[in-house]
Image (tube, protein in one colour):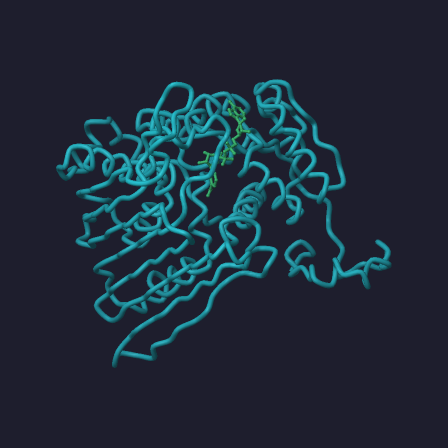
Length: 407
Ligand SMILES: NC(=O)c1ccc[n+]([C@@H]2O[C@H](COP(=O)([O-])OP(=O)(O)OC[C@H]3O[C@@H](n4cnc5c(N)ncnc54)[C@H](O)[C@@H]3O)[C@@H](O)[C@H]2O)c1
């Protein structure tokens, strides 16, 4: 085990009684210098989150930042100063941030509608790229990103981080690796939560800028469902609408047009049936995944009551009847990991990025795989608008996606 892989003892490291330990006496607390440097493009909510986690982990140093809104860079700088010991470079153009030889990776954390242009510029650098989800707001832009990534010499990692949430990590072990539930037949996923938060330019309140609610937010869940189904989707049917949130929001002459609730049914080609429920006018956050196989049922839940200012609680329940031992376990991460963002999922993204830079095997989403989450989301939005189910094979053909999906 190298120093960098040792478990950190942050409680002791950061306690007042250990601050007198000098660098020469440090063994448990010693940290190697980060082996990699990255620039962060877009320093809003998630950009700042990634900067904090990267600094806490210490494997990738954030070298510089670029954001056209100076206030975003001001806040990022002052937040960064709380947990890092070096100053950030502030770039005055996207090209300068992408082309600096001092860094060996780029993190794109800009609003969805900017991903395509920022990605195209970033890809001129030849550097490894982390691109926030959803890859793009339209299937045409997502296709273009997949085409570039396919012939790109470096890797492109997409921020579908819900794969790293503790209950779903455990569910994957049980259902996919251990085969505890037998052959999976049905999947049911739900998210109940409060409305979307404010954003710079309110980009997440408009379909044109976000791709729509099912693309913007629910790509995470469609990614998870497809991982568990382990099959391409065959048919998507949805009903969705805007009932409560932002019905009176007008911004720069446009009315908010995003859905705040939805029901989506997905038939996968291997016969697995899945559904997804969204409700965004709830007081607390609650997610649930129910997997039924021919030997048992698994229920993975995550509950976050932010009004009480507490960590989230997550459980995985495995019900096997007379087939084997049933169990219910509490799962979760340590407090610093849990508080890193999305209940610990953000923590694992810089780890995956650093592992990839180190040439190690990585569990992360790549563009061609991530494309399925946008295909399902877009098809669901189309189905909700037309009232008819969408046949995915024809949909893929219509949007010219066959080649990128089979690449
Ligand atoms: N993985 C997750 O779970 C997760 C969570 C939150 C946000 N996101 C994604 O991260 C992205 C950013 O979301 P956010 O919540 O941080 O939004 P935000 O509005 O808080 O911040 C976006 C920042 O990008 C800047 N920006 C706009 N255009 C830019 C450009 N061309 N170049 C550089 N910077 C630019 C804005 O000025 C702003 O500071 C979105 O794609 C969003 O979907 C992902």
